[in-house]
Amino acid sequence: MARRMRPAIVLLAHTASSYALGWGHEQPLVDRVASLCRAPALLAAQAVRTALQHLGVTRLALGTPYPESISRQGHAYWEAAGFQLVGYHRLAGVVNIYDESEERAAELARQADTPEAQAVLISGTGLPTVGVLERLERELGKPVVSSNQACLWRALRLAGVGEPVTGFGRLLRET
Image 1 (tube, rainbow, N blue to C red):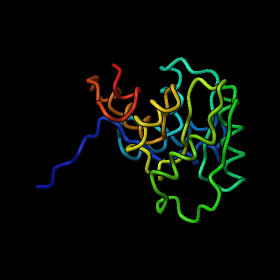
Image 2: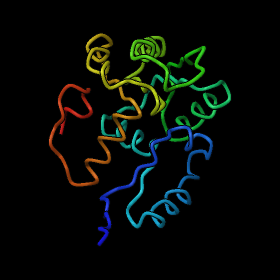
Image 3: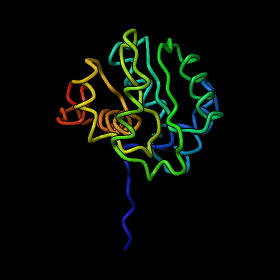
């Protein structure tokens, strides 16, 4: 007899989906995913927004690996979500986000950062960021949030897991 899984949460880990939909227009997609999976659903950008709010961030530096058109949508999304974008950088020459390196992701964060930013967001769940978050936070002296990290953090919290996870940035380390 086949067993049916009952996930605590279903996450659509594609930050640019929210950018394309636009701030405030994501709920129909969330509802559809939840209905199809018969479980609560969450989008990556929702997880990021909740993470940034949890950290008390209002002034944000944004780094994106996307083409200019999607990067503009991301910029507009975060401003409409209530964040003041005080830093921005787009990673040039990206052919396939999944072929990028941690060092290119780290350089993206460095280029996006400004002294006015309270945190740096590295957008894009396809970028390999987890291995550089701690180092970037020490180097920049502020939280560095990636889409993947925020997705994991939010999914764990929604599933009732509140223990700290060390080695992957302030967001996961603090309860």
